[in-house]
Image 1: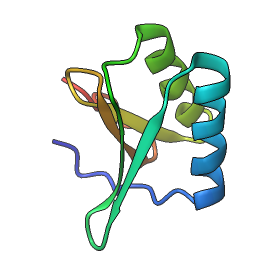
Image 2 (image 1 turned 120 degrees about the horizontal axis):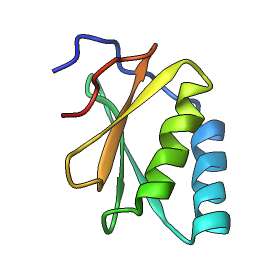
Image 3 (image 1 turned 135 degrees about the vertical axis):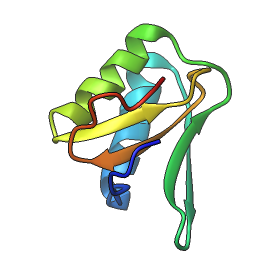
Length: 87
């Protein structure tokens, strides 16, 4: 488990990411937000590895880490780079 701080993404960035995933990959991303619990993102089905890699790279370029669950259906974003975010 990471001790990194969860990133709080601006709603405009989330909307842009959702639009890009739908336009380029026909994948709908859900956003979940809770007081004190931070943001998380999920998909109706496991996403293809190339899309997962695209999301990881997207956040890596912003010096953030997208940490996916083992089934590839959800992720959270951490500030900074986490060496081994997922198991």
